[in-house]
Length: 450
Image (cartoon, rainbow, N blue to C red):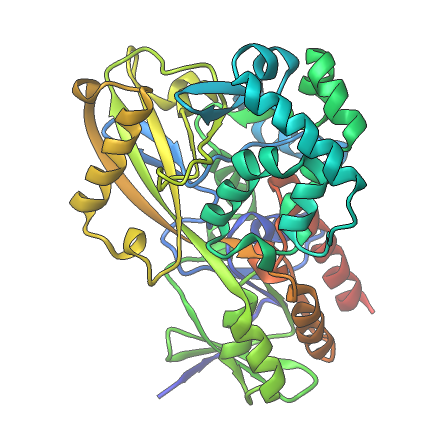
């Protein structure tokens, strides 16, 4: 039996990740009543900080980029002296050594095989003169960097990260960074270290001194615990074809609503709608894939591994795609004289990496981490793992058409707004998510005031 509860709040926010919290933050500023609903036992979604045995690590290699000045000011006001500006490079692991990311002249011509370097240069010139398709990520990558460089540094990595062949991926998976890389900027990167560090893959970013979860916690404190309902899973979304009328949680409690902001995975949202949407919309939603990640975290008896903010591992022999040393973001993330390493293993639910026993999973990743030479096996004093659901939307070639059709259908619901990475099915960074939350709150406040 479903218990119906009168919702005194005008707005129900589904999902307490960064975008949902940002929307709530701005509604609170505007004195608009709301309630945030989240299935976890703490706010933050996939942007949390976890503590184990005196070590802290994030649910992903998160950073706050200074790309939106207004959002940066808001983050500074929320975190104050706890927000630090960090300068740490990113690196690529290649044949037993780390190269700068992006590639620099010194690395390419002094540390890589000369035969490969010459072949890569010839491939790049050929690719720019060849009329190949750039409608998929593989074609885009080969055209941009040549077959040799693309295969070595981009295609292997992308197959591992997204879990599907690169020719089925949209060029959009390259994100803002790779799309801005042209032949001219590649040459500038090779020639000028200063240009490489400032133009694309920034070594500079902001980071809270006790982990990225500190941002979510700060927003949650401002919002107020009375406005956040945790351990509550949305199980039903009921509508009359024009408006969302009520939200069912945990299969038994129903909330009437005036306005709804959803940051839930868009495929899950469609699946929970009653009456059921048209079959073509249901099919398009089912076709959307999300990539999970499973973290393998190793606690290490050493002062530091290296100076990198993020390390990328494109080779197929490693099941992890990237890793990071939390201490390089903030010294507070590890006890004095210790450090840690977090390896991200992308996987779908049906893959071994997701379902494997805790011990088997950590044993396999540990063996591979030691193989890189980053750490010695005898220096690892402990380990743990963590599963992160729906970490990345998989942007396949037809995703835009499918997403467009879904949102065209959802646009008929006058009291619904959708936000967030998995809600919008977009690869968004933290500053994008904060902006999405703010803009969504503004639209909802305008609806309420009219």
